Amino acid sequence: MNEILLAEFSSPKALLKAAEVLSDCGYSKYDVYSPFPIHGMDDAMKLKHSKLGWIVLCGGSVGLLTGFCLQTWVSLHYPLIISGKPFFSYPAFVPVTFELMVLFSAFSAVFGMFALNKLPQHYNPLFKSAYFRKATSHGFFIGLDSTEKGYDREKLRELLGTIGVNHIEIIEDSE
Amino acid sequence: MVKKQLLGHDIDVSDKFSSLVRGLFIVAGVFLFISFILFFFDTHYFFFSYLTSYMFFLTLTLGALFIVLLQYVTAAGWSVVIRRVPEVLMCNIPLMGILVVPILFGMHDLYHWTHLEAVLHDHLLQVKRPFLNTAFFIIRMILYFVVWSWIVKKFFKKSVLQDETGDHQLTLDLERSSTYSMIIFGLTITFSSIDLVMSITPHWYSTIFGVYIFAGATLIAFSVTSLLYMFLRKKNYLKDIVTVEHYHDLGKLIYGFNIFWSYIAFCQFFLIWYASVPEETDFYLKHFEGSWTYVTALLCIGHFGIPFILFISRWLKRNLTYHACMVGWICFMHFVDLYWIIIPNITPAGLDIHFIDITLFLGIGALYFAMFFKNLNKVCLIPKKDPRLSESLNFVNF
Image (cartoon, rainbow over all chains, first blue to last red):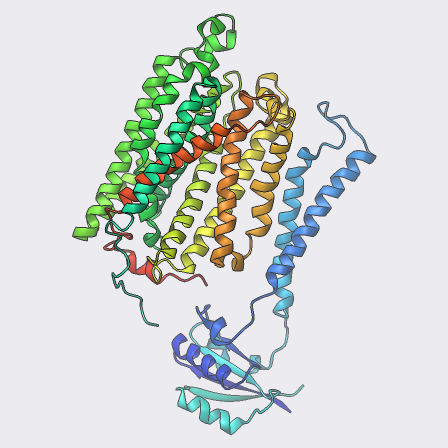
């Protein structure tokens, strides 16, 4: 049976320190939970840079092409004379092209973020812990997954003890 | 985390640039002399070429003034260590005031509305006469430079005074002054660009033109500021003070203002193109004549397209060599932009680069930077007692 070791720390500083120590010891299957973003946490956890930018770039490019091609197609296949301009008047296409680029970029940013964060998530073993609820207001937590190679409950207790953990809870995941 | 403190070993230039200043003055003398000789070969062209180079450095100076005002009006913290270079750049306003004199002598060559016999037969010019006449033009020029010098002197004096006294009240005073100075700046840059540039084609008008010049001015000022800090960095100044974080933010501003320029440039074109009113299309028709079409295309691709794609990334903004190349390219494009606005009025058939374009640009440029380094020699490289200095020293992009 899998389990999650939930450790609580007293301050954002302690949490940052704990993440640093854990990633230095080679742990990677853990996550930190705090009520607000903590500057420098990405570096402490040795996280790679988000791929979101590339997703937005793709979304934006698709929007740009869609906007331009749509207008070109429509104005060539349903020709209307507008203020004496040629049918393929590309300067007139710019605003709509731009807006579609922005729209598609925004969509890919929001939904790309959901996908990268594996949202929406209706179940997480951490929800079982009543204690964990204060992560949204004043609790600073680290959750370590037991599927990690070299996971040893007692050794972790000892390690976390040396860096000033407040409270440790083991949450069993029946799935 | 340890807070960075000011150590003070590499923030004082103390006359180390005096040989550079001397060299630049010599270069300026040589090129201005060559230009002066070329003046007698083609007087008419000389003034258009002069106005182009002049506008390049005037926009740089005014853009620098805008940067300084912007920092005070927003009470910005991160940018304190990158304030001194724009402050010294804006001090060149009196120099630009002297350099405007040849334009006043060349008014007859530059501005069609100064030709009385033409005005007599031209209804539009007659209607515009209360504004576009020689006497009022000169009065306005004097007014602009008096107002600009007054603002520049106030901001520079108090900022340098704070280096000695460390009085926080000075910052508060300047924050208060920056509000109305900003409004004055907005009005004067609009009207001066209408006078100096837009009135070359006196039938044409574009209400967005002042913003267009302003966008270019801010862009060039941020770009040159970034390049000058990299130059100081190369000379081993401010190495730990102006960090990659500050260059990153300068890069963001340059990128943003480049898009702003493109937006304004396109808006101006778009509305005129759509409406197709004869008086308004006058300006753009000149720019789609002969090889000017290629310059127009170069502006679209080079001024907007290339930086838009190649300067978007965080990593590229933080790579200083790359950053310098990109920003240098943007500076070049700003010159092309001004060249494209002004020169088609004199060589309507197509692009025709004259030798004097280069000598005048180098001459005025060398004189401009000689004065810049001369002034920089006298002051500390950062506002060392600014109340927000610590915030700026420890600034990090997350």
